[in-house]
Amino acid sequence: MAEERIYFYPVFIRLWHLINAILCLILMITGISMQFSNPKYPLIRFDIAVSIHNIVGILLSLDYFLFIIGNLISGNGRYYKFPLRGLFTNLKLQLTYYTKGVFQKEKAPFLINKERKFNPLQQFTYLLVMYYVIPVIIITGIAMMYPEIFIPATLLGISALHLTDLIHIFSGFVISLFMFIHIYFCTIGKTPISSFKSIVNGYHEVHE
Amino acid sequence: MAKFSRFRIAWVTLLLFAFSFGFFLLVAATNTTPVDTSVNAEKGQENSTFSKHKNSAENEKCLQCHGQSKYSYFNKESKRKIIKKMYAELIMNRSVFYESNHREFKCIDCHSEEYLGFPHAGNLRMESQPNCLDCHGEDEKYAKYHFENIEKEFQSSVHSEKHSDDFTCWMCHNAHTYLITARTSENIKQTISYDNAICMNCHSDFSKYQLLTNRQTPNLIKKHDWLPNQKLHFQAVRCIECHTKKINDSTLVGHNILPKKEAVKRCEECHSTNSVLMASLYRYKIKEIRSTQGFFQGILVNDSSVIGANRNFFLNIVSVIIASIVIIGLFIHALFRVIKK
Image (cartoon, rainbow over all chains, first blue to last red; front, side, top):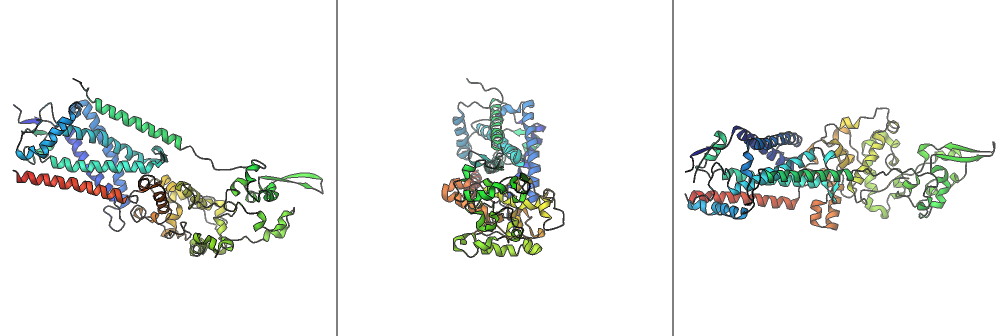
């Protein structure tokens, strides 16, 4: 029998998650303000947006280090690892559950327990975002902060700064979409707000 | 069963990033080797390379003395060969002249024929200097360069208003060295550094600056310290983009230099879709790339990256569509969950 409550989110995870969420939101808003800047209707004045985006970007990089080191020390990182074999089958199962099963009150194909904090779809997207997209956005961001040091004039005949910019913006776009989906999927818990409670008090409420 | 050690995937990923970052730096290091364009042709050096120019032999009569830093002549009085230093302002660098727009000219097309004799007569110094409009004005052949507009713009600029007739075309455009770049250069960065060097010629050199004023040259680095990434801005933007009245499409180079307080200072004037930058060189270059290399190259092959101004219409639409699909999808999902409850 599954336990009713599992202590899933130690303090460092909750703290990191909270900081990460706030910083990402600020970065999204200032990023959009710069990308869609319009002198007549500024969301945030350009130079202010640049300063905020730079400072918060550095803070996010530090927060990411906290995440990496915390995962290494606490062993929380193990929840992100999964065998490649059967990955597609597992993802398909989870996707089918979200597109059909969830409406027919079916049981989730992968029950959450102490050994499995995330379902395969979560593992896959979290790994993709946290270990691929976030490093890319941090590296391209720092490179654009010091373009004279890190960015060559051209790369394969293309302006390297422009390319870095495109990659940075694309990564930001992916993370923004992830955020929407992430927040929505948190409503699929034992009750629509139980997942939000969990990330505050640390206890996951098991549901079937 | 294949066992995956803890973090193997994460570590491999981080290593991959480290390697690609290293590669990036490597490319950066190999790409930043400065191209030395300074030329110091000594007398006779590579004279043969200039012989393809039809007047090079004729011009050598002048350049044998004016082509380098020293000249010599036989003094009939003392019966000795005298070697003297040529004043820097009177040295004509062959390599630069034969690259310039006026490379096919004879010296005596503009200067008096009497200069062919030596020593030169003193009154020749009073010879008046021709201005651009003297040859280029109201000539259909040069219509596309809009010399008359340039003249008009110049007349209302601070250069002209503050310095009256002392300030001539020559202050910025030396007819011996001037090379058109904005329309011909394939490299926008080259055009930018060429055009900015014209301003720096006086604004960073007190000996030239004081020809017109007794004021100290302002420290431009300090004056512009409000600009983030100053060095990059200076490499990527021409002084005239901010310091002239909006440059129009046909002239490409603004001549109406504004007083200091009217210069562009708000970031959004460049960093937005109706960027002032898009009124000139940048739009010209992007249009050219699009017409010669296709649409997608237009997105990627873009030497300048300006946040907010580079917004690509196509990518914009695609991103809005994708974001809408995701949000509508989530909304429908939520709706079904409520209905099926």
